[in-house]
Image (tube, rainbow, N blue to C red; front, side):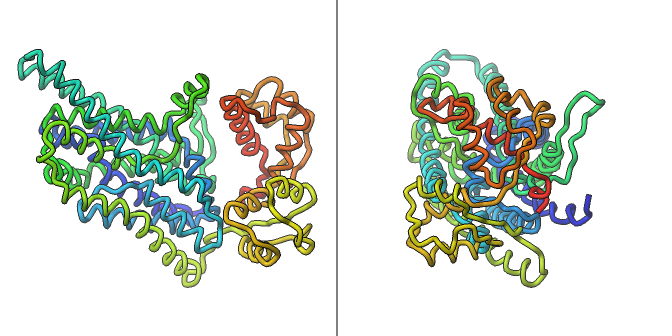
Length: 493
């Protein structure tokens, strides 16, 4: 392993610390502010379960987030992570709960602008819609939960000491669950930018328990988050718990419950599968802001209990933080990339090759994209996204959505089917899919779309249709196949 890797990963560690410091309030802030549990106790519990969630369930950056822009050089990952971390630290310095997911999105878009990479505005719109919806949904959950508890449990005249005991247990349970879930969700924002570097080899603990390279990376990030919670998390708690709304033990429990339910609703693949099986519309699975869900729950409880007790000036200040975080992160990223590339002479993007052959041209045309003037583009090799983009735009009018499709199809990303490697991962495929794959043993493909077309033409078990659940399973199989079949020289480019 190169020593430079440890230098570059420091920005991810710094980002993890910043995230932990800012997001501690979302986990046990209500328990601490309502004086039900001591801060140090919650910090230890939160830190432990954040690490467990990151290592056990941290699956890397989500598909929706990745489609915004894939950072493929470790110096670029370092720069984006550092710029985002500084943005979060500035917000934390002013005691403002800020969304790391929003800052990460801003950083990725800043990288896209600097490198000329495409931004998928469809994915960005979906993410933005969830950002707007999540605090409102959380507020509704909290409002209804408080009304329900008030009309049932609080009417039973339970002894105050016993009620406090039940509440403390509830805060511990839901805070612990939220900590585990937060670790699994937020570690992608912290270390997802470095996953493609593949600097840690997979190992087996005691020769039995698999410990992948990604899990080792997530362990480092999880520890950074835990340290951030313990060392600086108490400061942000004061803003939400003392300035925005005065939180009591019962309201604190309602807030944590509402936040947890909303996070599950927008990020649970299990819930998505259930909805797909029932033939119902699915909820977008996008990186959700736990800070927004938490603040929304605080507002919901306040409206249910006493609307006049909410300090909407503080809420307005917090909202400004939400809006400014991605903007600041994007600007910091763009400026930082300029200095890292031109002053420190570090490669912030690996050169990617593009070529439009006859098969790719046919696929592009099937998307309704006009290629009438593309004679000079066909079979020409491009060694960089800017060169490819400029040439495309010179030969016709193409919108951003079409550009994203063209980049996706034309990118050279070589694969070789090796059934011996695939056999080790056979649990990801159906028996029919495995039989199809074996027919392509030792065959190479220069584009992902060529591999997908070959599979779908050979057997309908690879063909997408109207069944959304089946489509999801096929897409997951394709992603796994491309991951394990991608040539190493491409990975290490």
